[in-house]
Length: 282
Picture 1: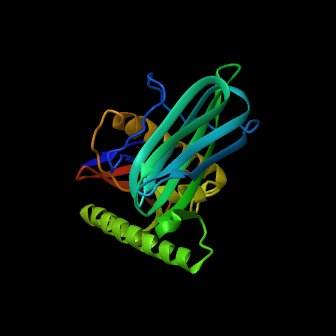
Picture 2 (picture 1 turned 60 degrees about the horizontal axis):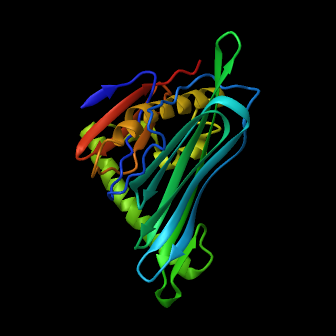
Picture 3 (picture 1 turned 90 degrees about the vertical axis):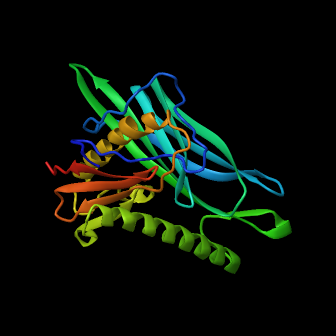
C-alpha cells in the first residue's frame, strides 16, 4: 500500500518486544511545525541511557529525556523513542502548556546482551502578538552497549576501551546490521527502489543531520525535520498507543539525491509501507 503525505512525513515506531510506553497525558495533542523562532532556543536538552540496577538474571536501563527552554512558552512537547538491537521497545511523549521544562523517564528490565539506541525530539510552540506563531526544536540521542560478564555482573559502555568491549561491540553491531539490512532490502525490493539514487538514513541516526541534511541548507533541513516529526507524532506515535503486540524495526529514510522528495520505508506487523514527502528548498 502506498500513501502520499504532503507536507509531512511519518515514521512507524512500534514496540517489538511487548513493552510499550505511551503518552504521559490522557488528552491527545499533536506536534505542529511552524517556522523557527530566531530569538528563542533551548537552554539545555539531553537524552541518556544508563544502567540503574542489576541482579544475576536481569538488569535495568534508566531511559531519560529532558529539555529546558530559555523561557516559559505557550506549549512544550517532547517525544523519545527507544530501540534495542534494532527493534522498537518503547515510546515516551509529554506535552505541557506555559512551561520551560519537560522530563521523561522510564526504567526497563532486560536480560540479554544488547545495543540500546534512543532518539528524542524536543519541540516548543511560541505565540507572538498578532497571531504570529513560531517554534523551537532540537534532537538529542544516546546509545549504550550492555553485556553480561560472568560473575562480574553487567558491563556497559558507549565507546569500547578494552578488547572484550571491542569484541562485544563488533558482535552486537554485526547482528543488528544483518537484521536491519535484510529488513530494509526486503522493503526497497518490494517497492522497486533503486537505492543508488538515494541517501539512506536510519531514523536513529537522524540527529546527526540536524545542522544539515545531505544537500540542503540549514533552514531547509530544519523545515524537513520539523515536518517529519509532526507526521511521526500525529500519524504513528499516537495511534500506536492503541495497539498491542506490534512488531517493527528501525524505519529507513531515503532522501532523493536530486532533493525533490524522500521516502520512509517500514513494516508494521508484516504490512510494508512506503511514505512520501516532497522537499521544498524555498
